[in-house]
Image (tube, rainbow, N blue to C red; front, side, top):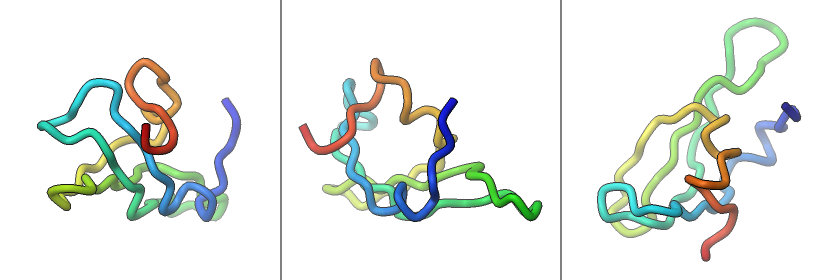
Length: 73
């Protein structure tokens, strides 16, 4: 698994392959790091563009191409 730099993940755009609660387009609004010194990404918060509802997920979920596509498609 490739490491993802937190600054590059923040504010990226994602499209859900299957709508999540009737929402399809999301934006990464927060990146939560572990408290240990290496600061690996633990969780991210994604915000639905239309409804502005946020959801906390593990960042590895974004790597599953059957669930998420990078960018707004």
